[in-house]
Length: 446
Image (cartoon, one colour):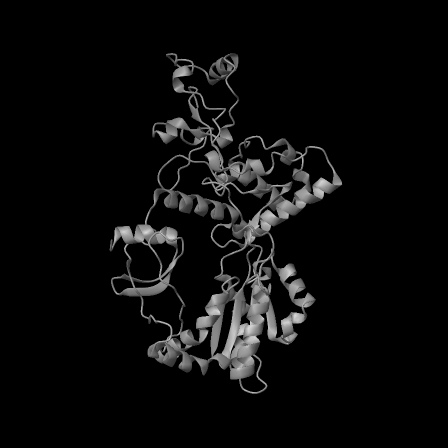
């Protein structure tokens, strides 16, 4: 402005965390032509800037430096912007700014942008321009740059999957999920206490020795309640941790007969129904599946005639799409090992079951059928059924609205613990995961 000093204006999308480019128009005042004395004409000043090959500046999108410093004397005749924000800093109206070019996209993605909707194009760009090591460029770096109908379909399918995750994750979409993951992974790496301020203690309950009078009396009381139960099996995960690539309910409970977990569960429920339910009353079973397990679960039940249970006794509710699997502490999304056009997805946690019971009308229907209790059990925990009557007896006797069957935990054992947490006048009883329990105990009672 006037003497060659000016501020260029840049607009970056507020939702993107792109690397800020070096302003191509900015030129330090020290490198500008020195001010000459006297009344120098604007024409000669402009000519000198052109001779020095300085970049052309658009006054309509450039804030006057002297105005920003409170010393412009041209007033309304100044061709540069005179505007400030609420904090008094010189700014330009958003309508007059321009978006800088982002860092070059991977070649395969750049050549494929026309395949996607504007929203998908924006999402792909955001993923590639996340700051530092958290950007997700690797998702697209193995893409072919040439047009091929088969690969094009795969590209569109992946972007649709990423867009669905972006729309379904409530806390900031896909970028919010990745940001939260980086924060949580870093806290876990540093061993931070995620339950800061809460004091752990042993919760209300009873411990039993098998065969004692207390055990037998509680079990006898619980047997009166078994015929009023609806059973809920959470089976959304695969057996990868066990070195088994199929659904876990298809694993054998033991090798003598090869009885699978799902067969054992259904036959046990039918035995409870036959002996303890009112005549003609069916004890219902709800199975929560995921995208990984749903089709195989339905096929296993159908192929075995539902293991003797009436088909209308079984309700299957499916978890949503899930979330992308991450392979490092920078929250990089894991690609499919065999397909560069797909990513690995993991189902949500077991907590989904409560929302699904409500949204599918299961809880309401069971209540109308006279069910008093709901029994939640894991896909590979058959031993829990041996203590079901005992647990129901304790819940009935102590008036508990929720109860958990537990076993003694050894120090450092990689299992969670049902824990009572207290902070001032607040209390809650919950499962604390083993990787959170150790720092919690160290920070409080140990």
